[in-house]
Length: 426
Ligand SMILES: Nc1ncnc2c1ncn2[C@@H]1O[C@H](COP(=O)(O)OP(=O)(O)O)[C@@H](O)[C@H]1O
Ligand SMILES: [Mg+2]
Figure (cartoon, rainbow, N blue to C red):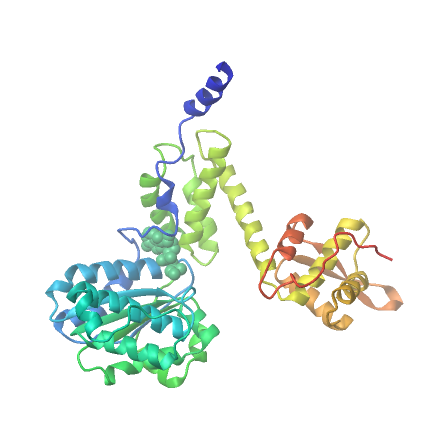
């Protein structure tokens, strides 16, 4: 009894670091977005059209990750909804994240279901059923044409403007092509009552190269670029967030500046800055100390770098994973220098054991160079005198982490390989 009291006393005596850490997470949409005034004004200028009874141009937004694209558009959607009763026709902003809803079928089905719900809200279930609308569109199984027709009919029942936000649109196009964009941007010429306006958001500008020229020109009738934040802007963004998320006076000297500086170097990514600050706070919390210091920020940075590397390993193609795994096994087995030939021997063995195609030593050497470029291994070219040159290879991440990341289940990964726990090297 005494002892457990003591235990809790100790925890209760430590002042908490966080007031509410949720405000530091990406899921929270802030109510003010400093340093995005210009972009938000541009958005408003384009999207004011429906308030005047016009259809706004389609809009294409791009900028690196963490530059506030999603936050700004969600902010705009709320504002639009707030003033929509002043508009001559209903305005219905809809947000879809194409990383999740990532095929033409699923996009159309999701839209159909959203607008079916809206119809029922407006007129009641019975009326909607009497018009021969389905209860809902299943997420698989119908002919795509029929899904499209259902969405079209549901939308065109009313005088309304659908502002369809397609976030991470580059993911959609890479995975499923641009057919759905073609169909959506073409709808206005067939709709009688309703109108559609598309807002596409992309982290990757190059992706427009994959688009059919017709889709490209209609999607980017208007364009808004979100530039990276600089260090001072990031500092300002963090400071405003700190008041609501951290307890008073728990951040030590220089903590915010250091988080901002790190994130500024990383293409001005506000998400990174917030993650770094939160992780630093959590490290301090775990130590039961009452002050977050720059040392915590440094450790948070190292931890996040490591996590990022693991993520890179996780998404490598199987052959590269196999090459990396060979390096891991060699590192775990012996301490002498590892050269390309060693890696190839182990790699070859693994392929044979797993019944996989064996690449040439030259190709494996290329894959090693790629791993080097990704920062997963360090491959230094050394001369072997008259025997030519080879690479000396060292892991840049702890072997235990590399092993875990390689062996983790992955849809197109290595799970089909019977990777031996123990491997005898000859
Ligand atoms: N100007 C800003 N003010 C406050 N928070 C911001 C600002 N810009 C971005 N953020 C925050 O940074 C994170 C990343 O922003 P997000 O809009 O998701 O970026 P993107 O969509 O461009 O990748 C989110 O948590 C968001 O709330
Ligand atoms: Mg985003």
